[in-house]
Amino acid sequence: MRTDDTITAVATPRGTGGVAVIRISGPDAFPVADKVFFAKHKPSAAQPRLMQYGKVQNGDTVLDMGMCVTMPAPHSFTGEDVCELHIHGGAHLTESVLQAVLDAGARLALPGEFTKRAFINGKLDLARAEAVGDLIHATADKAAIVAVNQLEGRLSKKISAIRDSIIDLTAQLSVAADYPEEDIDYLTLSAFTDKLTEISEALDKLVASARGGQLLREGVRCAIVGRPNTGKSSLLNAIVGSYRAIVTDIAGTTRDIVEEVVSMGGIAVKFGDTAGLREGEGEAEKMGIQMARTYVKESDFCLVVLDSRFVEAADREILDFVKDKPHIIVLNKKDLAQYAGEFSAPSIHISAATGEGLEELENAVLSLLDSFVGDDSLRHADAVRLTNTRQRDAAVKARNAVQEAMNTIENGFPADLVAVDLENAAAYLGEIVGLSVSDEVISRIFEKFCLGK
Ligand code: GDP
Image (cartoon, rainbow, N blue to C red; front, side, top):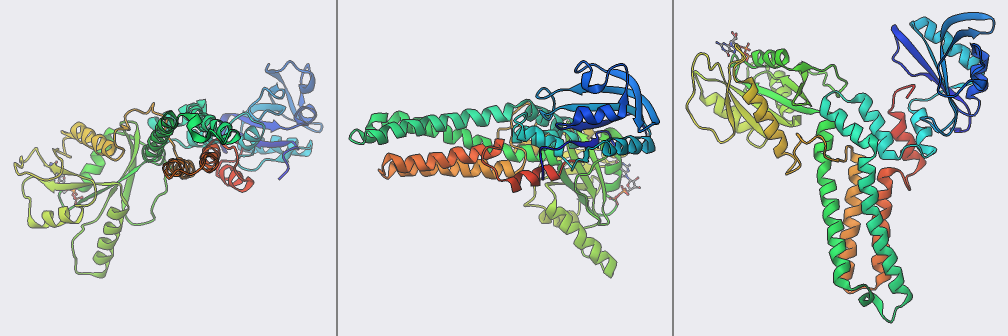
């Protein structure tokens, strides 16, 4: 894919809206804009970053009256000359103006190509570019905060700081290699290993942060299970009624399980109301049971709904089925009865009918989610986290390489072997921010972006 031509795309969502933005980026962005936008000054001669009002044309045909702004390289999102046309947001009109820009010589951008160019031109490192995608797709507050932190470069700074320490140590080793007679003593071995231990701990923390980062970014799935008539669907309705429902593209299932995603404590939680988990007679029931069981297995945690009036053997069977999954026992219908028995898992008394106890349930859910991530509470959205598998894999490899370096020292091997391990560690960390990654990996990352980004 060329990176030296001029690309264009509609930057706003498809459909009708107040305003649509068409973005043009590349060496010919201004000459292309000159052919479609007419005002007091041609775009190529206009004052940068100042909106002009004028006519948008395709040849002699006036398509719209709109605004145009230019952002010369390198001070633009992509680092190239960028021009934006702000036009009226009609679906047909937007297509016509896009066509005019294409006719004027630009090429239609691929998904994520603007952000990819920003990366190639050094405007964003890879972790920050990924954050652009995450921010666009964030469905709840905390996911958005994590993405903004990453976009601001907080993750990148942390990675770079660790990487710099590793490179410092490697440099010290090469001094040792140059003066072999003094060998590793030159470094005062204990200070060196202390520093390595510190780095290894920082990497452990970074790797551990990925679980929370992924839970926040992708959302959490909860299976609501229980005997028929305990109030599962009433509970789901009560939750949807009390929390902000999220319209989401979090990967859904096509199975016959009612799912709703809400923002609970700023975290996207997908609740699925499963059918009964116990054996049934007919084929359809058996399939329903199978689905419910699979759903439970694939969930991050469960809410087990019991009817406070009667806790029965069948309930115990269900509790037994979910015993290895993190779960909360929901004693429903507290308006009718209060169950006094004890359970081995946290239990909450609620009434799905009146909404009583929902806050306690929310707290129990958030505490449970926190227990997934060690001391790195999900409520601290501010924490710097790894947010995807690519970043995590690279951090794990970096950590392993640092541990390898420590083993190498322990086994008394020479400094240059330790240096090889440390160089590997630095290279893996570099991958997170986009140093030393293959074109293929880069393409794969940006393909997932939407068109116009
Ligand atoms: P499901 O089969 O587990 O999904 O149960 P439903 O949500 O359909 O509820 C079964 C019955 O219990 C319905 O008649 C509900 O109105 C009733 N119900 C559910 N929750 C409560 C509650 O908290 N209090 C009372 N009094 N009735 C409830």
